[in-house]
Structure formats: structure tokens, C-alpha cells
Image 1 (cartoon, rainbow, N blue to C red):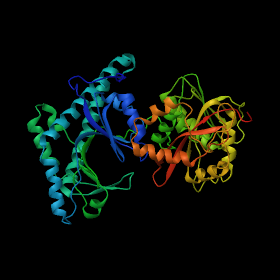
Image 2 (image 1 turned 90 degrees about the vertical axis):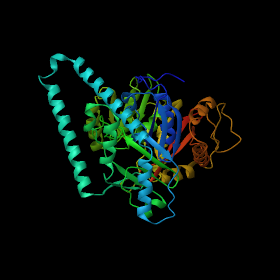
Image 3 (image 1 turned 45 degrees about the vertical axis):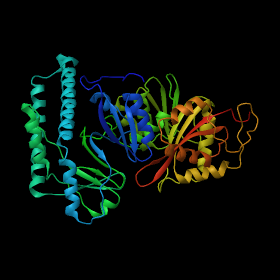
Length: 476
């Protein structure tokens, strides 16, 4: 396995156990990413979460693009038995879960503190070495005061929550609901203060909440921080206050950043390539791609002035205005020569505001025209788009590389078998079966052969990420 491309922590040769939350359908992307970016081991998943072990520091962990949030894993075990309807009994079970093994909490919190302290030292060092002439007098003192004020406010909020026993609700991506209360926080902090020999331990605070889904959610409104479902029980500490999916370089969000990055990761972007998003909107896909693969010529086109203005603002905020060219153009009449683009990545709009209807066929045909032979198209399609494309081409028979007809209409054989095996290896058999089912339902579109498919969640609805390869020039 390749070495971690970045810093590693000393003293944790075996690595630290983490888990990330992920949008439904993005687990295969996250599993591949933690392996390649963090050299992670012991990678496994349950729906909506990916578990892994790594020696990477916070700087590398922050670079994860397909994850929603990152947690330090304390405990993962089988679910509670919810045969009893007594809330008191279930609450006692939850107390036992958190109190029976205080050492696991102490170890996890110690690692957590070490991670944060190491990161703080690196930030302080980088600020010191950045440019001494531009630093204002007393800047570090101001920062320290702000941090202290923020810590005091957080402590006060936690105390108020404890006094009032207030239950806060938060909306989860998988339709779960969360209630929070810091009833056991003081006891846990006292245990930590006694066990960890440091003067700053009294300042250590963290919020406790609980997530429930499945049968237990109907029985009990939990009051301690745990992730519960019918198949698992997970306890963890959030590593960062701000979710990883909330990108600092995106001023105005369009498509979900994790979805945009996942699409770009499938596109086989190479240095010097020409990459086009012909329906770029606010430019989220181009931003994610340009941040990850900078040595590329990017173009974004859209027919809407307001969308292009928003995209321009995003490019300026991200410092990528010189990396991405924006064009006002219709996706069905792109001002580009035939076979002039290496890669196309696009979110095909859908919903009440967008009624493409049969135009989806003309859109894909124009993309096919400007794409080079051997090039890649990655599209985000709604179920309606999928049905229309299938009805357009289900009677067609694809051509093979020699120009003769294939034996099986709708064949979805990958143009590069080794590449297909490498891509599907990290994913589980269930993901592979689901993706193959999507491929089997989608015939080629002219010279565009579908090679990969992923069903992903957009919140209230699902969509399909399709990857196509152009096998030949039309008419050959």
C-alpha cells in the first residue's frame, strides 16, 4: 500500500479508529478515498457510515471530500434489545453502554486532545512563518482571547442545557431525528479530569447527543450521544465542529459538494485535459474538480445569466477565476468543435423548475458530438431522465471497436477491464450488484457506452450517477 501522502502522527503506529458519515450511495466512494488518501486499513461500512483505521493527522483527515462528518470511534457493537417498552430500562441500558468501559472513553478523549493540540501547534507555526511583516501587533493575543471567549460560551451553553434538561432536535440526512441532553456530561468530565494528568483538562468540554432510527426510535427518545439503529450501536466523538462537507471555498452552494466530488472522481481527469460542464449552474462540480486536479483546462457553460454570475462569484471566492472559463451557451448548441473535449461532467437539472422532457436526448447527443473518442462523460440523472434515455435507445445495438455489431444489445462491458476491476474492488458485493443492475437497465446511447452506475441520495429524492465512455466516432 502506498505511503500516506501527508503527515503521520508519532506514537500511534497501529493507527486510530475513526468513522465518517456519508450520504446514502456514497459509501463506495468514501471507502476508496480513505484507502487512497489516508492509506487506511480495516475499512468497512454500514449504511451511511464508513469505519477505518489510519495514522493520518488532522490536516490529512480534513481533506476527505466524500464524507459528511468525521468521528473518533469509541465503541461499536450490536444493537439494543428493544423488546421492553420501558423508557427507563432502555435509558439504563444506554447508561451502562457509556459507563461500563470508562477506559475506552479516556483513551479516545486523550487521542482526540492530542490530535487537536498537534493541529493547533502546526497552525501556530504556519502563522508564525507565513509573513512576519504582515502580522499585526498582538494578533496572537487577540486570537487567544477569541478562543477563550468561545470556550466560555460553549461551557455556559452546556451548563444551561444541563440545568434546563432541554432536548434539542436536529434533522438527519437519513430521516432520523436527534435529541440532545448533557445529563451525564459532568460525571464523564470528572472521570477524565482525574485520569488525565494535564493542567488544561478542566477546560475540556464536549456535547453529548443521540441518534436513533428503526424500531428503537419509536420506543425511546434518547438523551445520550450514541448512533443507534436496528443493526448497530455506535458511540463516537465528532472530531471537527464544522462538517467536512461544508466547503470553505464554496461561497454559494449548488449541488451537494460530496456528490460533485464523487462525480469528478469517476471522470478519470488527467493533467492537461479539457474538462467541460455544459450545464454548470453555480459551478460546484468544476470547483471540486479544480481543487483536486488543478493542472487541467476547465470550461463551464450555462444559458442562465444569474447562474453564471453566481458561478463567477464562487470562482472568485475560491481563487480559481483563472482556472475555469465560463461561457454563456445552450447545452444543445455548444460553441465548440466536434471531438474537442476530453471529459464532460454535468448535473442534468430536474424537478418542478426544470422540464427537459424529450430535450434530454438532444442534450446527450450534443455532449457526444464534442467529446473525443475514448473520452468520459459522468452525468447525474433523475429517474425520469433515466427512463427517457432508456426508451430512446433500448432498441439500438452498440458498435464494437471494429465497427461491427455486438452480439448482445445493451452490452455494458467496460472498455478497460483492469480499470473496472480496480474501481469496483473496494465496494461490497451488495453495492456491486446494485450498480450492475443499473447498468443492465441502461443501453448504450449512440457511441456512448455506460460503464459504471451508482444510485445516490439527494435528500428527499434519489438520483443516478452514470459514467459513459465514447467508443467510436458517430457514423463509423
